[in-house]
Structures are given as structure tokens and as C-alpha cells.
Image (cartoon, rainbow, N blue to C red; front, side, top):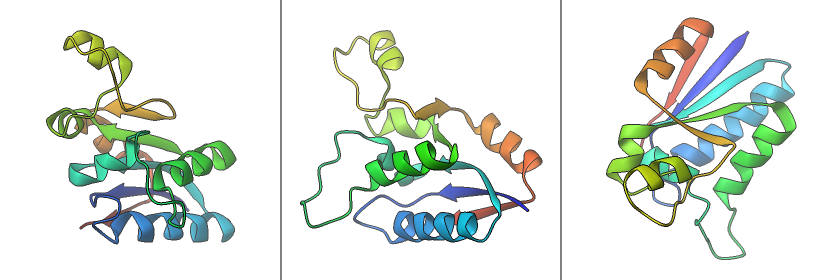
Length: 130
């Protein structure tokens, strides 16, 4: 079965990203396919490479990147939600006149149209809300 995840909770203030990551690992260990993870609302903060938790805590950004590297899971981020929260990739930073950015591959800024495409492409879309 082909799955996708929708993560709407911020790292370190919501259990949603932790639960989604554990669910993703369980899916893959169970032989299922995880097509993509879409980050929306406060969940877009998972895409920030500036995230610096204490060393004794899991770095969720790095764990999502590992999931992408190990299994090819796409990491899509709602561009509108990200921009509202000050998160942008290099292209959007240049377009809005900023020198710095906080989102880089494998996270990709996309629109809600991508979420609709994911829903049509996958058998199940599991939501992890805050």
C-alpha cells in the first residue's frame, strides 16, 4: 500500500512530527511504500536547517533528511505557510530581497496543489495534527 503523511505540528511543541516520523519508520519496516511527507501550518518548521535542539534531543530536521536519503521519501513544504512563518529557500529569499534562507533540499517548497496530487497518487494520507 502506498502512503503519504501530512504533518501539521511544530517540532518540540507538538507530538505530531515525532509520531509521524515513528509511523513512517514503522511503515517502511512493514514493507509499505511511503511516497511523501507534506508539511503544513506549524509543521513547516520541520524544514528549517537552522533548528538547533540541545544535543541530548533528537534533531527532527536531520531525521527527516535521513528518511529522505535512506528511502527516497519526498519532503514537500507548503510555500504559503512557510513564507508566513519566515521560512524560505534560497530562491524565495532572493525573490523577496533577503540575503539568507532556512530551507534547503531535500525539503521542497510546493503549493497545496501538490497535496492534492499526493492524495490522488497514494492509497492513504495520514494526518498528524498538533
